[in-house]
Structure formats: structure tokens, C-alpha cells
Length: 402
Ligand code: HEM
Image (cartoon, rainbow, N blue to C red):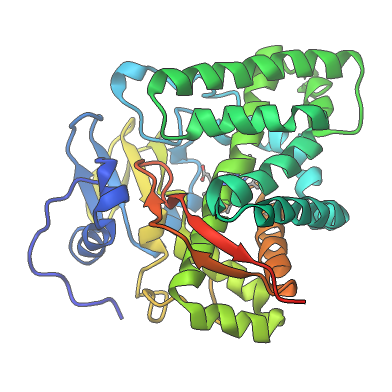
């Protein structure tokens, strides 16, 4: 059953970044789901676009990659920023058949079997990160724990020398942090510059790692160009770190706000896999994903023309009460939990198995060592329309008394 419609039309503005740091996007999404499931968001700072907020509509559109293309970008972008430079080149920004060919190059690295083989290294990395955080009186769960585990893991998979991991941690924090746009841009250029050198080194001297795979790969008999390799490396680094960082920290915050759920987990660690699914649904860190219509289509009577941008609002789909019972409750035992936090269809998250393992191992380590986590300040949320969740989460970690 879909919930009663909210009578009053709230001011709909989904592209104000402040909405996600200090407002209530859920009120707008709830109204849209009930009253305007295919909503034309008028142009403002960004060109106009369609908004899909219901679970079934998002899932159906996700499955139709013949109508909805990724090649013009998957995130809303101001018109004066021009086309996304990765368009038609990176895994995330290509359509079939090239998308499948590119994905085929790296899929194996992210399979269940490959991730299982990585688990003991992931556990070591996680223990090391937690030990360092325990050494201080307080820490920022986002920067000191949640950001570091996925960054170190993807660096290891990509063949980044260990001595450079903290350099890339610094660059990714600057590129995706709250700093000024110049610092962000400069850091991002440095990331691209780093991969330019690394891919050249791996092409000359390939090893058993992801950058070597890309640096020596061909699609349809044509080697990937250095630019294609660099952009795909960037895609893997960003994909591998940003969402996992926010989901891990957002999940911790959810546990701090629902201590009975953490207690339940500590009493029954077999609940960890379903708890991780609930963390993914609850945090839904990818706020929107965009497609461009390459064929005209109609959804709920609204005509979508060729060239129209269509956006999927994943946190909204994951709180749709037509699909989830008590969607606004955080419940680590939730079953079924077929959330869309990792996308769906052709572009379903390449790192889904890895992300799930990283979250599970992180919470498992905190539970196994009975580390008490308490808030040590006010959490701050990200000011962004792309990803949502904690930007800072000050905590105090206390090891269990021996
Ligand atoms: C909690 C963590 C994560 C979340 C919430 C998340 C979310 C998503 C979503 C929603 C998509 C679909 C994009 C679309 O539909 O266009 C996606 C794709 C992708 N993700 Fe993740 N992701 C996570 C972790 C990871 C990790 C650890 C990696 C590791 C490399 C990764 C790499 C990618 C890549 C490369 C794609 C593009 C796949 C394609 O287009 O075929 N992600 N992710």
C-alpha cells in the first residue's frame, strides 16, 4: 500500500545542495512518490530534467538501457560545464556493446571468489586502521576509519605501491571534500596525473593488478588509449572509495542512533549480512543517477522525448512503502531487502561484493573486539546533490576492558 498523499505541495527543489546537509529531502520525495511520480523539474542552475522517485519506476527504467543511455553522463551537470569527459569512455559512462566489453575486462576482479581471496588482507587493513584510531582520544569516523579502509583496498587491487596510498588518500579527500573548488579541481588533476604515470609504468612492466589489466587491454582489437585507461582508473578509484566511505560512516551513525540494533548485532553476529543490506538501503549514499533518453517513451502518461534527462532518486526508491514495510525504520533483520542502493541492470555496481565485504568486515571487527563507539561531537552532513551522508562523524572509540 502506498502511503496517504501529503496534501500540501512542498516547494520542490531537489538541486539545492543545502537540502541534503540541513533540509529534509524525504518530505519532498514522499510527496513526489504519492502525487507526481514522473515530475518535470524545471530548469534553474541546472537544465530541466525528469524525476523518478518510485521504486518500481526506477527499477523498470534501470532495466531499459536501450531507451536510457549512460553515455552523456550519469550525474546532473550545469550546462556550462559541457559534456562529461568520461562520456563514451569509462565503464560507468558507456552503453552496450562497449560497456559490456569494458566491464568484461575487470569483472573477474570483483567476483565473489576474488573478493573472498582478498578478505584476509581487508581484515588486516581494517585492524590496522582501527588500531590507529584507538590510539587517539577521539577521531572522525569518516576520515580516520571509513575513508581509509576502501581506499587502501582499491589501491592494493589497482597495484598502487603501498608508499603512495596515503598520498592518494590525501588527494581523494581533497578532491571530494568540502574545500574550495580550486583545491578540489587541483587534487583531481593530480589524481589523473598520478594514473597517467602509473599506467605508463604498468604498460611497460605489467603485473597482477587492475591498472596492468587496463594498460594492456584491447577492445575489438584496439588497445585502450592512455586517456581511456586514466579515466577508467579514476572511475575505479572514485567508485571504490566515495560511496563506501559514506555508507560505512552513515551506517555507524544509524547504529549510534539505534543502539538496540547494534546490541542485537553484537548478540547475533549472523545478522551481519542482513545488517549490511539494511545499512546500504538506509544510507542510499548515491543520491541520484541520471540517464539520457535516446528513444521517446511514456511513463505514467508523461512523454519523455529524445535528449531528455531522466533522474533516479535512489534514497526515495529505497523508502517506498509500496515495496518496503515500515520503510522509515532501521531494522537489521529486514527481509526481503531488495534495495536499489547499488543500482540495477547493466550498470549494477561493479564493486557490490567488495563494498558489502568491506562494510561487513569493518562492523565485524568493532563487534569482535567489543569496541564501544560513542558520539564525541555533532555529525555534519555532506552538502551535495550527488552523494549524501556524513561528512564528519566525531566519535570516541573505547576498547573493551581486558
Ligand atoms: C556502499 C558502497 C557503494 C555504493 C552505494 C555504490 C553505488 C553504485 C551505484 C548506484 C552504481 C550504479 C551507477 C549507475 O546506475 O549508472 C554503481 C556503479 C559502479 N560502482 Fe559502485 N557503489 C559502491 C561501492 C563501489 C565499490 C567498492 C567499487 C569498486 C571499484 C565501485 C565501483 C563501481 C563502478 C566501477 C560502477 C560502474 C559500473 C558500470 O557502469 O558498469 N562501487 N555503484
